[in-house]
Length: 160
Image 1 (tube, rainbow, N blue to C red):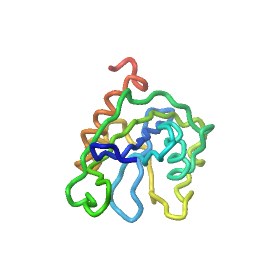
Image 2 (image 1 turned 135 degrees about the vertical axis):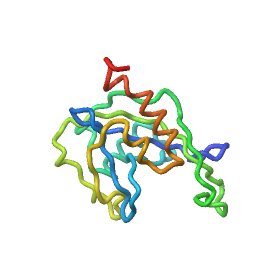
Image 3 (image 1 turned 120 degrees about the horizontal axis):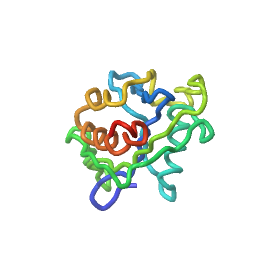
Image 4 (image 1 turned 30 degrees about the horizontal axis):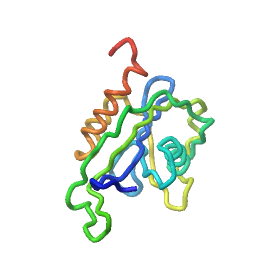
């Protein structure tokens, strides 16, 4: 779903383990690492899209996680010009995302990256909470920082 401003509705997923580390995944065939994310389909809520993406991208089911929190509003990023497909209608200039903070309730062996015919990711690891801001591709950096700042108090209530 692309809105009238050209932003595609999307969800982002911050999956944490019991130690407060975050799930960090490498895009298949690339050296680009990111959090799981994906588009919201027509007639789908953000939460429904999040669970669908969770299953498609990393093989986890709703009973494998607990929703801790989500961002209060859309967080937006603009695509670099070389990634904009000007020959499509409507033109997508970026993404607007609702971010979910989830806690893994089961053993990490439940994570399956090959849950679809074209896997999104080919490797993953647990990463310190703030490291993704420095490691993600530059055009997503400010959204990652906003999402992490907004959701940090739910994992680190005594620090923030």
